[in-house]
Amino acid sequence: MLALFAGVSCLGSKKHLAGLSEDRVISLAPSFEVALTRNFLSDVEEELRVSGLGFGEYTPSNSLVERYGLLRRGDAVSVSGFVKVDDGFEAAGLHAMGGSLGEPLGTMRTVILPFSRLQDFLHLRGISYFELATKSQNR
Image (cartoon, rainbow, N blue to C red; front, top):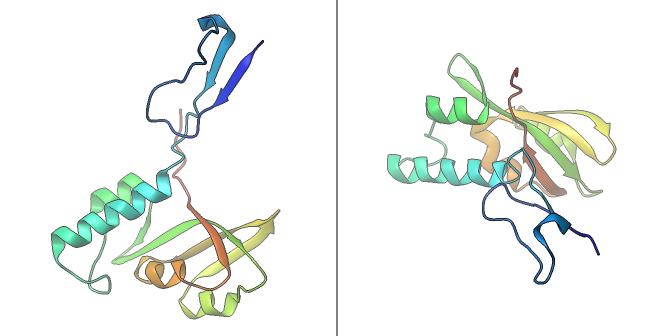
């Protein structure tokens, strides 16, 4: 019997089934951060808490911009990612925020929007999934 475990997080320990020898248990842990968007939003909330500012007055720190690969052009910061929408989504709402959608790729589309509108974007009707894009790195 061969047991196969797919890791859903880079954090934590490998799991093993009782009674199986070590060489019969395979643990797949992704090399990417599957919780990136959750960590990003948590870090934004922490910076907001520490700063005492409301979301409208807040600008992400340089370390947050660098860590999460946000786009900075002058004083403006933008967020890019991937979004899954359902039939209730209206692109006009995103465009009114200064955001834009890329062409569909299966059920996903790329999205870019001003950071200042992130809170509004996350509450748009018809968005069923959002994932922050990661900055590519040369190896």
